[in-house]
Image 1 (cartoon, helix red, strand yellow):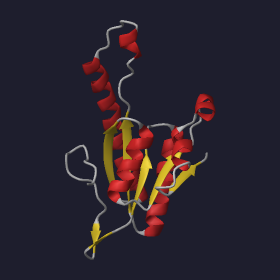
Image 2: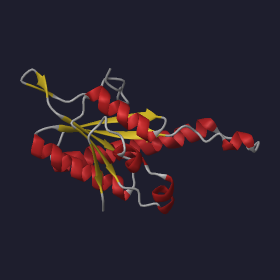
Image 3: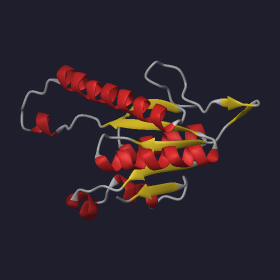
Length: 161
């Protein structure tokens, strides 16, 4: 089953001559490296005559607040996260239009590695593109790009700045 977009419709590649065109999935979190990945994916989509599906993954709230008895405003947190997703969707649509590539935008909840893999599988993506994390701790503990590149079930491109 294809992932659902924010509007509730299923994300899919535009239909050309009765067959779905190739689709490239790109992880987008708003970081400079994710925008580099977005631009690379858009260029590749133009070369392949395909479209891109930008996936923004909202992680589940950290349960550490409950452990320390700190009240957490889940409604406020979700509202802020949704605002970030809406801003990313608008910016992605603007950039895709400028680059001349078709775009769908999907918001998922959970762990980024799992969500990006599931979306890629659901859409039978040609490629999954992510940016390399610039955070030092991610290089030590393992970033999403590292976790994805160690899997062999989805073709992955890690864009390095």
